[in-house]
Length: 109
Image (cartoon, rainbow, N blue to C red):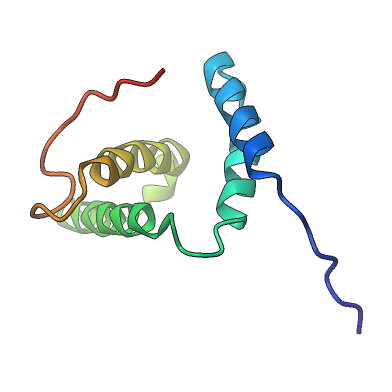
């Protein structure tokens, strides 16, 4: 049985490429983000995953309340919006009540 080859991810290069893609509106940003997530060996992105999970649960509950049985019709846009809201949730941590109850205006340079 063949073993999976070891992949080395240069975090600095991936982060710089992600920033460049975000500034240019390049969809390749997703590739660089995926590589950074893959490289997260110590769970540094776990708070973001928890915020996203909470938002997904909220969203599914809302679909159930509205009796929406075919949510996949707009799934791609819904997931993107959930990622954005979860990013706001994650930015508001540390531990002050339920994540996402407030809003921030991020200042990125």
